[in-house]
Amino acid sequence: MIPFVRDFDFDYAQVKSVSPLIRRIVARNPGPFTFTGTGTYLIGRDEPGAEIFVIDPGPELEEHLDAILAATAGQRLTRIFVTHAHMDHSPLARPLAARTGAVIYAGPEPCQASNGGIRLEAGDDLSFTPDVPLHDGELFSADGWTLEALATPGHTASHYGYVLQNEQALFPGDCVMGWSTTIISPPDGDMGAYMATLTRIRARQFAVLWPTHGPPITQPGPFLDAYIAHRRQREAQIVEALQQRGEATIRCMVPELYAGLETRLYPAASHSMLAHLIELVRRGVVDCQGAPAIGSVYRTVAPNDLTGEVEARRSAAWA
Image (tube, rainbow, N blue to C red; front, top):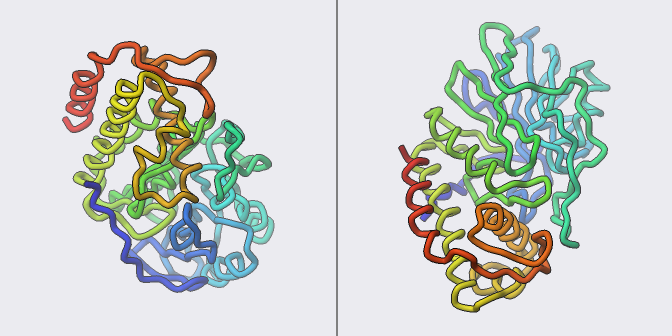
């Protein structure tokens, strides 16, 4: 079981200091994919004249823009970092930059629209482009503290997390969320890349994770172990379901494998299942006619090989 953390003390449009170098403002955009809303992080000392970086400015809401500007009044907001181009993360970047002169940083690859005829609530910000594309491992320093850009592909191809090195803290965007699992939606989302990213994050042994949605994860090691195990278990369940049925579509399997899930969340589950199946097809465990898609009919190819592979990958991830 994933040890989800959902208790969250916040007020909309109010700045809250959560560490010596971190303040957070939550946007008023709650929903089934955003939890209580987008958490925008202000990095830097809360002092007059201090240099401030912003992580995930969020949706284009006037109230949220005003709250960020009020919280940083008398300070120098110089850089805006976006984890990925979704409508709950990136749209406010350009208006905020226009008001402050800050430079916008994000991954270099443009967002790809979700496929399969299913639209997720948050949506893709197809118009977003950064001023400066990031490179993995880039460092940005100000006033005695340093932020590191960490490539974390999987949720999207160009997803980036940010490491506040002084506090051993990672801002993982939507790569890891304390309140829920993460949606992996092809073609921008890639399950193989995502699992490699989780392993990379686990190996860094961060002291705390600050997701864009919801409260912090204060015990990242056990949480990530459970996150990884959940994905491997879901993968095994998909293969087992195909073995039992002989062949099946995603729409047939979702109600069975996601028993108890609200039906309004079936589209999100379908996208994540598609990501799993694309990876299984890539590894030769599952097959389908044509390119894997939501409406494809899937069947197993090597049903006896999966258990050992899953256990080997899980052990490697936990090592």
